[in-house]
Length: 210
Image (cartoon, rainbow, N blue to C red; front, side):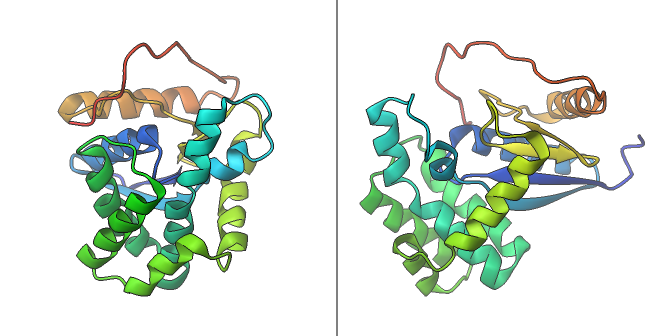
């Protein structure tokens, strides 16, 4: 496909997931080099792990403590639209991943508050962190993403290119420049083959966000 053609990508993410962040910044990089429209949707790590019995207690505690930002992201897209969600996510993510830390529940409140202020969104959207008001909408968005890839061994992010969705890509660093384009074309090529299902290898180092 000609790089001048506009390509639509649907991207499901949880704001606190490091691999959602690397994939989102990869798509941002691709968008600097070609016509690319990315539509952002919320996926919840909490909902993904809600009924699992095989995860470590520490991981479950982290998931429980970090469920608030996905609630706020849902409130943002519900009240202010998909463009506002993309802006909020960028402002939120750079405060967490550009300094790579795992905030506490209280620190997430500070990050959310600062991110909302930066992009000019209503401060009261932070209240969604402790509210169930947008839980139905969050689950609907979450379920819509999973419906495209199944509920097996999948997680966040979920990416749909040319209407074909897959879990991932799980990128340990952000591809830049021509590398970003090559990864994009590779993902598109594999996703376009109807009998392709999985590539995977064990992660052996922490993610790199620079």
